[in-house]
Picture 1: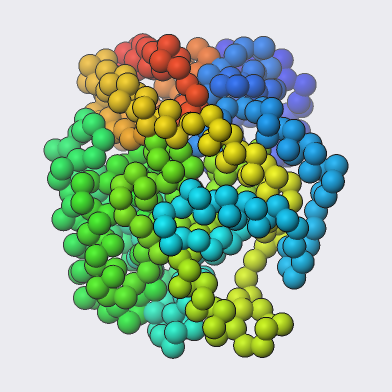
Picture 2 (picture 1 turned 45 degrees about the vertical axis):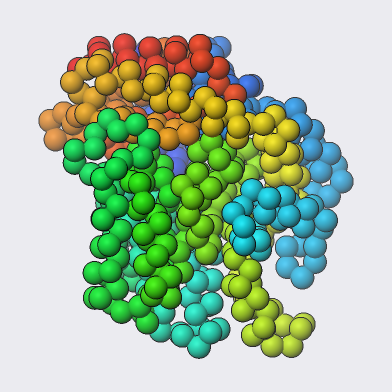
Length: 445
Ligand SMILES: Cc1ncc(COP(=O)(O)O)c(C=O)c1O
């Protein structure tokens, strides 16, 4: 069914917006226009209610139009709409920084604000290089990412990222090399963390042998890869990466743009998997998606290094930042969002329901032979769909479109369907989402 006749938008208006990460030609023939959102549901132009099966873009774990966040934002707009991010401050950024440190593993207690996940990654990578330079080790400039990793769409992000389609068009990036991913053959349909695969961390030793630790600034990985379709770390894998980084004086960055603030049923992926990085990038859930914001947590020794080598006190210790760093409205939203996560006990809730979620999503295994793998952790799941006619992305697209028609929003990316429902999702909503997805997959395969 086409929605274009119901849209008030003209074709020229549709054409004027070059949409991000979208099939523009297909969308503009059959636009999927969302008009409002409340709780766990969107409403589209037809007035149809649509369950938010990915919490926005992994952003809105609290659901939509949360009164406490709306009120905090409305109040802040009236009081202080903007204040300069450089050399002047407002109270809420300091309050929020402290609030964020409460979610961080011990020792990650210095927070740098950005405007997005991509900017958080850029910040982590730039500061890594600058840190080594400040310590007299300016040759440490190369980065190690991981195959299937996603670290945003800036030049640095695509360089360390490992999803081929995001890299091929853009030519030379930062000098980066990649660990193999951890989606091991033979581990299909593993619930949670697989037993096999830890040894893939040892590939870092080969990369160090090749490039020498004196040239490597940092290793960056998502503790759980989200965009590649929920790739959960094998048992012991992250711990082994940590050991190797320590032994070779290389910084370890966890990109927790998706995993921080509750999605894993823990405060962070670091907490869920029991490994603490030197730097953690976050964004998305920090404001519950209402206003763009990112935050990067550094261990104190990194911050102290810049302060100690900062020159005269009136000088900048690091020439880095964004016009919208610590934006007052984003800070107000962040305080309300993190406050609600705590007040509503949502991390404990996700943790408590993750076993039920796991059981429900793994029921999809028996729906059709085109389901070739299912992975899950916390309130996240990835389902791999067998490719058709050399077009691996086609079936996931068809499934997502059919689900939209039925009133469910799920994400499709490469050969996967990704699910990440709001933290407040009830069992009957999980059942209805999984049943609808199962029926849809069956109809296709
Ligand atoms: C792990 C990770 N890092 C970075 C980003 C980039 O964030 P943004 O799109 O806010 O720039 C994303 C976005 O999905 C992400 O999942």
